[in-house]
Image (cartoon, rainbow, N blue to C red; front, side):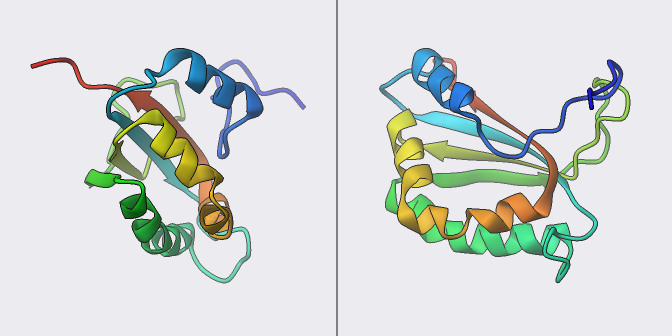
Length: 138
């Protein structure tokens, strides 16, 4: 089934192609900030909680893993309205997470500890964007 042109494509987990592009486009040195746009399921995939509750469980479990690679959450905010966006695109929460490097981010994602908890994130989300950024020099 194809996605109609007016409906944005849903995305939850990274693809092999997105990992390859990360290494081609993101700088190898210096901090990166990951802009997360999150849309929660009404009910998580396992049916035992809401999507927001499943994501809260993921967030709590990822905190020590984030700290272990030198990462930190810079801010979290509720999203109220996608003022400029494709029709029907909505987000529930936005957060910005900083890692000391692209490789620190990848190391966390590929760790066995992260792999053991990422199912909470996948179960929680109906759609997501994860945009790799770097700050402009002051």
